[in-house]
Image (cartoon, rainbow, N blue to C red; front, side, top):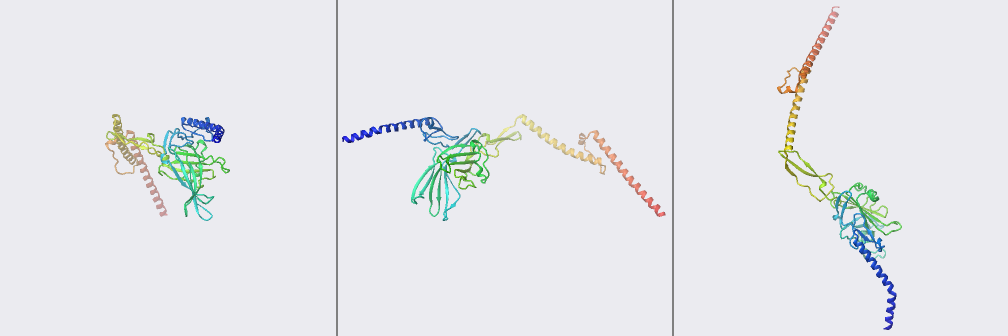
Length: 407
């Protein structure tokens, strides 16, 4: 009994520094965690959880939960640059996309399945499952959680999932313009998928990063998910680059494209225009139309048409314009008829008598009458001269032939 007490005292004396060190670490970690709780949009740096560097600010468009060690997107994004609000709740949760099929040396088909979680609050990571170990060949159930993970699937003859790896362990940020943060090369690999993504406010780039490095990828792996507004495809589907069907062209950066209506901004009163009709029967109508091309969705609906009474000034202007149109149209037709009559009278070739109505007097000045009469006289004189010249020529030819006959 005495030996046991002595042993416990020895163990207690030796473990006291270790116990104090452990308590000190726990106190510092708790203090750092409490500091991160007080500061919004920060997360606890697990690699250095002490001091001021323990709280790391989240990237653009991201937030964090209390005591979290990563940042995430809550599926809502406010663009300060474009003054738009985006609701991405239709994209929350885990989503999958499969690569193109490949075949083993024995002819078995297999493919890579990517599982990804873009946003959510509370945030839930994607899961990848493995049911067999390639090293031992034995059945082994294993689940991996990660923002983006990949597993190899052999569908036939029995579904086998193996080689689960994490491609990213955190979401770095959300970027809405390709010109920012040196992301302008992100869309070159999607040139075959309906054209490259253009620099518009309806474009988002979710940048994931994995800190695990390798000889081939010394800076770790990254996953760039491009989310593009497209009102015609509904929720849409995920796509991999056509020239890199396995999702990557260099083995280190993986790229995914998602065309969906949920990436379109929420409609506001700035997305439609008012069209006013003219005053008809003392009333006018105001209708509303969406600005084209329409990029927004949901939000405020189009207001119904509004009908209101015209003011006295609008009625006077409308009536004056109507009278002007009638007078202008009638005067135009009458002017055409008068011009045709003047041309007929001036030509001198029209045998029927050219007459004018009494209403035509206001369109013909004295100068016009005199000019038309002179043209008619000149035309008649020219015509008579031409007839006389032809008669004189015929007489000369007849006399010449008579003289030749007499000889």
